[in-house]
Image (cartoon, rainbow, N blue to C red; front, side, top):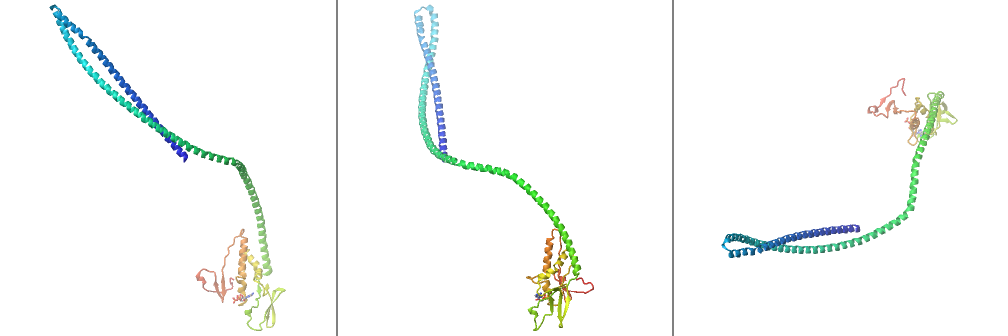
Length: 421
Ligand SMILES: Nc1ncnc2c1ncn2[C@@H]1O[C@H](COP(=O)(O)OP(=O)(O)OP(=O)(O)O)[C@@H](O)[C@H]1O
């Protein structure tokens, strides 16, 4: 704010100074012009005075010639007739001279008239010069007054600018001192920052080298690990192949030992809903020491049946499935397997095959085992699983999973010698 005011005042002072300069130049021009015109007028006056003097002298000379003519006239009156001729001549000459004198007088009168006019003109000029001089004096006084005003205003402006500048200078000095103080407080922080910056720069420079070598090292380690893994994979693959071969061998042994068709018996526990009458007794007995023997009591006599395995009434769903789990695995290994339940109504076929949600039977457990095995072998084998569900009831075949409505109907079963299931 103060700086702006100061600048304004300075520009105002400059304007006043330039205006003053212009006025001074104008004054000097006027003075020069006045001097020139005065000089011209003086010159003209001088010339006219010279001319008047010349005319006066000429007039005086002409006036001085008059006595000569008078003398001639008197001489002619005194002299004899012999000289009449001369007298006549003298008279003629006198007449000529009188004419000349008259001309001279006329001329003199004209000159006097001219002198008078010149005097009048000179007087007018002197009046004009005096008027000019008065005007010049007046202009000079006005100019001096204006100059005085301008000087005063200039002084005032300079004083105002000086006071503003002094205040502004004081403010600037205060600011400078405070900045100097802050600067003197800065160097230790600045030095520590510089040191930190240098160390960071060196760290950054070293980091790229370190980073590059670490990446190379990591690459080497990864390559080594990959090699190791591929070696291990090769070993595993080899082991797996051996395992598959072993399984196949065991399956063949199993089939050989147990036969192609295995018959398992699950004895249903006696449920409350099965006890309809008093005095009912259990007619099926199992031997805990012989897993393949079953005794059925009929008409007071026990009849023993030999089977591949007999499950006690308390056998769980899990135990049943463990017995047939190898068959499911054989299915994945490429063998045909068929598991089906057979028995009279209410003997527990559905319970064993389907089970419940909480306690699933063979179907669900077999499928779960099947997909677990497929998941384990997915890196080496790909499997396609298809499912169909049918029911044969009262000699009628029903498809459960078909999406074609025409197949939803019942299809009668035609028994031939080669029944496919
Ligand atoms: N081992 C078992 N333990 C407990 N309950 C069983 C067992 N076996 C069967 N049951 C029960 O006996 C009843 C009849 O069983 P299920 O329906 O499985 O017989 P089913 O042979 O399928 O009969 P159907 O031929 O008429 O369909 C069911 O309530 C079932 O829960």
